[in-house]
Each structure stands twice: as structure tokens, then as C-alpha cells.
Amino acid sequence: MNTGYNKQDYALENGLFLSPRQVAVLRELAKGFSNKQIANILNIAEPTVKMHISALLRAFGVQNRVQILIKANQKGFI
Image (cartoon, rainbow, N blue to C red):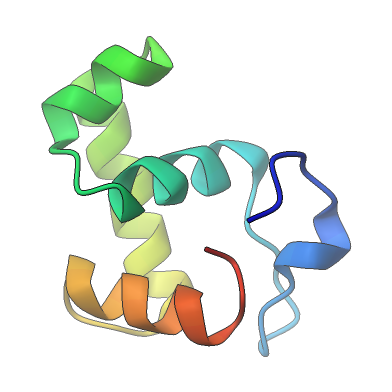
């Protein structure tokens, strides 16, 4: 897993890219952390985590967190 952020490494088929914060949330999500835990780790508010997860759902065109992780793994993001 890449620990830095390079925009080109996080390109989606629709021409969009994951933001650095979305990648950070995705990495913590992949570790199995809850929204509250992710918020504490990243020092952001829990509603902000929810916003980023919603953006990830839209970006990957999926319905839930597990599907985010499956798609992210398939793309080599995690």
C-alpha cells in the first residue's frame, strides 16, 4: 500500500480522482475502523467522515462500505 498521495494513483474510470482526505478515510476504513474511530484518528468530526464515505460511495458507484473496499482493492487503492 502506498503511504503518500499522488493524484494519478487514485484515478477513477469516470475521470475523477479521490482526494487526499478521501484516501485517508479509505485507508482507515480498510483497517475496519468505525466512523467515530476514523474521526479520532484523522482528527476530524464524525459527520465529516460520513461525508467522505458518502463521496466514496458515489465515486465507486456502490451501495455500502464493503463494496467500497472491494472496488478500492480491485483498483489497487488499498
